Image (cartoon, rainbow, N blue to C red; front, top):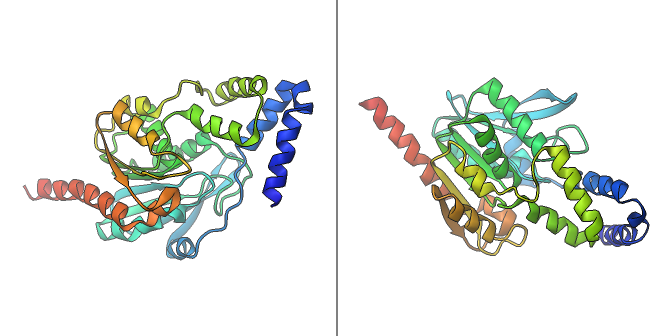
Amino acid sequence: MLLKIRILFLRLYFNSIGLLNKDRSADKLIHLFTTPRARVSRKKEHEILDRSRKTHLKFDGKEVCLYEWGQGERVAMLFHGWESNAGSLGAYVEPLVSLGYHVLAYDSLAHGKSEGKQANMIVFKEIARKIIQEKGIPEIAIGHSLGANVILLLASEEKLQIPKVVLISPFNQMKAIFLGFRSILKIPESIYSVMLDKASKRFNYNIREMEFGKVGANSPLNSVLIMHDKNDKITPFSHSANMSKRWGLAELKPIEGSGHYKILWNESALDTALNFIKEETDSNIQTLVK
């Protein structure tokens, strides 16, 4: 109820007083856009995080929580999505450890147990880059929603050759996320245009033209599985369909009956991802035997 009232107030503001100073309104909107809502963690997320080795690293003067499982030399890294936490990908931890992987995950700023009140895709990416510099390039990378897009951006910009990548419910066009935000708050076109200009300048990416199918195609990644629920109401299935169409190397696996969040604990999705990962593991074992 309080959220609905706040949204109604913001709509009224940006369609009245906000029009008097479009620059200031655009700044306020970017601030809102980069401020995640607090979300209660699920019991199963807590349970998997409680079994981890917890450490911290400094980023932008704030503490970021890092979680580790397993002792293997080969690294698998998990990337959570917006308004989520490292435990959201907990279903993958024990299977990866049993395959001999040293599993890493982190809470981005303003998420989970990490400090801060604001975050964005660049913050997610730069934290991950710092972890990789310290722990090594992962052989397996699994990301959900925004976390999936972070993997693509990081691999493209850093030329990371990650042998196996699993993208769960990613978005394809950046502008679609901003359009969703605009729709919720009924932002007038004159303010929205200024917001896009400011966001593009601040994040150093052209928001209007950024397409992740193209980002992936320009990366060194060549073994990629995309999983997306066909009835996802948060990020439509069409995002992954268009991404895989643009990026011929990416294999698309439609999932049904899970939605945007439950897909992370969906048995069919988990089995599909692990079979995809095991292909790499089995191949490496055969190479060592030879």
